Amino acid sequence: MKILSIEHIGIAVEQLKNRSPFWEHVLGIKHSSTEVVEHEGVKTDIYDTGSGKVELLKSIADDSTIEKFLNKKGEGIHHVCFQVDDINSAIKELKDNNISIVSEKPLIGAEGYKIVFIHPKSTGGVLVELAEKAI
Ligand code: CO
Image (cartoon, rainbow, N blue to C red; front, top):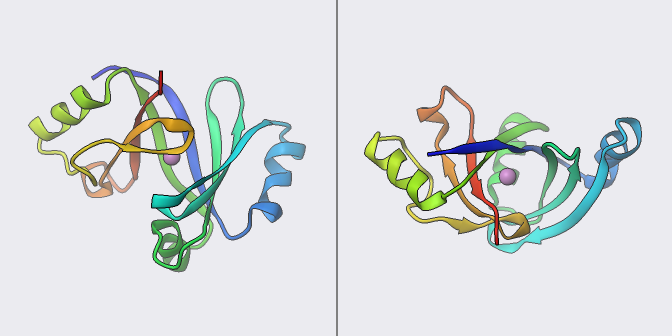
């Protein structure tokens, strides 16, 4: 697979409004969008440095993965996302290497990216997301 860049860092937060001022006003990173990703049960607030983004992730469903993460670990880094050129070939390569992935097929994530998550048990404890940019 070809990794193009670090696309974003996903950070779990209890409330967007309490956490966004640090990223937007103290660090001065431009806010690029706010989006609800219904099937993941999250609302995300995205800040773009121009070479990698910060995604603040707030749970909007009691059974979402972010809700579970917050209950277990509290606020903090949830995942790291790398941009790939071709998600389907990346998935095939992961399977060929017996790497544990969370879904068999790419899902549609924030900003329309095609995404897949790699299980932390295969990465040394880091939830890794791979994402192919929508055309
Ligand atoms: Co993400």
